[in-house]
Length: 146
Image (tube, rainbow, N blue to C red; front, side, top):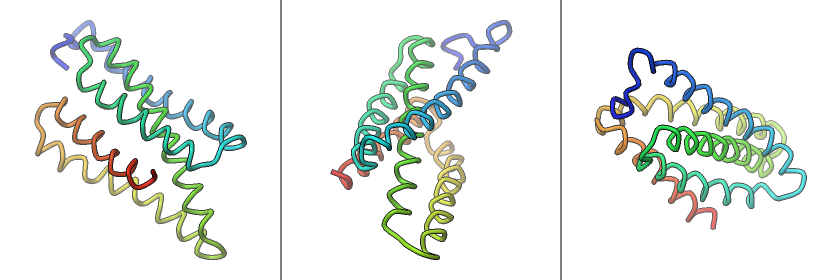
């Protein structure tokens, strides 16, 4: 983040960026909860996948800090949609005890993603390439859901 001079007196912008990302997850959860009353989880999932890929690639090529933070917020909203809809889809296709087991296993997949992040970070030293490596595999999910 040295390209935007986020050191010394501008270091607070790093905290603001992280806050806005987490706010995007919160907003995405609430918005998705309301959308699930009107639309199917599959429809919301497909639209969130498209938005996440576009905004994620946009983050990698954002020329200004403000654009990057805005696109990260949009990415966070889309990720919250994908996570919520994925959970609903997984638990809807199972029943009984398996519904609880499926929900628990679904939560563990997020943890595996967090665990693999340091591995990806060691493979992609430039943050833009890392952002692309995280965003572009979503295209595989888009093909699977389409």
